[in-house]
Image 1 (cartoon, helix red, strand yellow):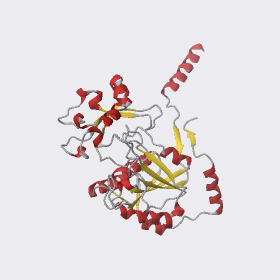
Image 2: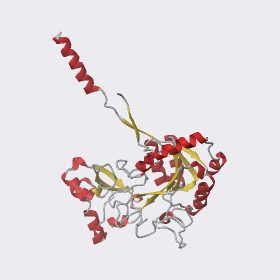
Image 3: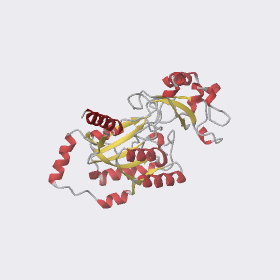
Image 4: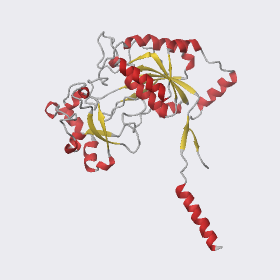
Length: 341
């Protein structure tokens, strides 16, 4: 009898060890959002002054009337409109000038992006996390003949101060096991807080629009409106959409092959249903746009044109459904259920 009891006890303990712990699933809401990605002066081919933006993408002025028409003629589709905003401080980690390099240095000499060593904050958010050029963390790990390195003699004193203010420079030197590696493309100084980071005058906006900013951490870069470039750190967007009970997203904006592309993939991975409005966005290169659209569709996004949206018209919703949907909006959308018991 004692032996049977012992066997039962051991079996129960073994079950506790090998059984997977209950995983938490965030159930997406029923609401729909229009996500306007980085439609800002800095990315426009023509700004309010008639000059191109600081990191201008060709033909972007052509999407403004399309986005405005979507808001006017298909606005009934959306429960909320969210605009993402790239907003950088001086000497941001994505600026070539920060490291004494030429813009687009990652595209020359087959060296690729600047090697970085980074750590994630305990919060899992971009704020509080940091990266440092691997060159300054462990010089022996970088071969400047084959990899992109900073050009110390061309770095300004202010930029040097910004670089070495990164907690990753010391933390990753002292505790390399707590850090990870990535690379960073080198862009022009763009979308500065004190520069052309604002929204185009011709873009229709409303006080009810939600603005989610990214790129504010000088030591972390984010193409995606959801996550940083390493896919480890979150912006506030997912939490914001969850609070608004959003489960479906229509994406428009700039650039198709960068910020829109990475935002779409991250949205899909986070469980959203994603529609990409192909004529309401512009990209950097034709080949890059074609590849990005193909991959977004392969990963599960639906490619759609604005004309197809207009043809669909407004969804028919009964009075009861409207009431139910409105009640859902007033409740917390963080509906959590657990698998298992």
